[in-house]
Length: 609
Image 1 (tube, rainbow, N blue to C red):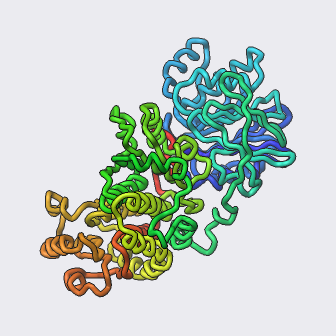
Image 2: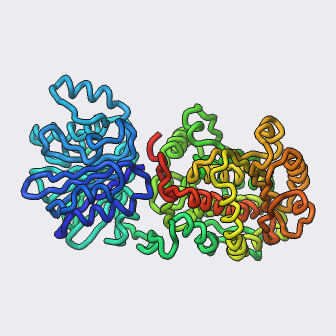
């Protein structure tokens, strides 16, 4: 959730730290702060609100060529200056920034209070500053003081610490919450996300769980919690700096909606074997024999990733004839799951750092389960902790509201389902038809994007309406739920997405004359029953907006507005259907004047449970 940025080198730290924090704004935050070190003095600036508020409150840069900064999303303690990061210990010798949650905070706080510490904030993070500061007071070096502090906490922590008396060193540590180090010739950077590093370097080192790094100007050393040296591989930051810029678009969300044809093309590149009617997933090669023995598949994720999992579960069951379900990772993690060796578990997370998804993943691995991963972020925790999997290669997604990552994740489940289907019952001709449909997706997505004007017109008409319903069948039930989620996330409109079958069991009571309803009516096996649902909705006065085949006269006569779909294979309709719902949500929020890329109360990566 929160963002961390640090710098050590020959330049002014203030500007570099702020620049990195601005690239992390998409993660969601409610306050920001920076501390620099100059002339053996910690110089601190903190402010509630956006980084612009911090810059206004501190118009002159803080002096120093070493510094750390943080964007906070409140967990422990309210949104106030005293709770902003960075936090210092009571002697003001050490300052830290911290992402994560300390589960044993109450016990540690009581212990420190009994020893005479007076806390200045309500946060759990200040406890870490005190623990590190007390280690320094006993004569420990900063690396050792951080290591000792990390051994005392339970929970998650990605931290960077700075010592007033050691102006040539930053120390970073990771337990659960991501930390990456950027490498330069005579300078280094540290952040919670590689995106913050990309303007400065294309070389990084990713800390693994339980690792601590001493970071100098141009070099670093890494140890584990038992003081053993760790060799680290230098990795390349793949995305380009301009990918995190809005360009000519008003908002990142709109840019990312329009990037979907290119993102889907990039996600598929080299992964389709049209002649064999199958997919080529390099991550599966080393486990291919095991996949023949898989009897069940479980996809799991949270939020938007859960809806992509639900699409995948339908496709896997429908086409591969493999029993498959989608699970909410947050519930799976705490349910004492039954883990079977004949089941493949597939974790889905855009960031690869979603805490609930990682918790479920680790519980399944602990019980001997085979876990694959689908993620957008190279080197993420999910990628490193799964046996195999696939990157979706959607590119950086900056808007909190996920769009291109959703369709790319759905594509990944399609490729996996196609591979399983061809390993089992799907004929070569049927596989080729599906593979060709996937190959044609980028062009057909461009046709869907041409409906932006119609979606904007509908959004102007219904923006702020007190309730909107989204209805689908089959693989499009989760797409309806995803459409409702987009509208709730950024336009703050109460909405619900559901199966047309479920609609009759209660939700029809909500329908009144003029109520907006989105209906997903692709020309597939679900069409006839959706027609029945349309009749039920129309009889009760709903204003129906249908995403359907333009040539479907029966649908056109039943609904108020049709957003036309190009002809397509039934398996790819979830990806096509998602686009107009994304556009409707975007234009609804824009018409209402909301902060689209940074909706209230939400964060991009939910790294705490």
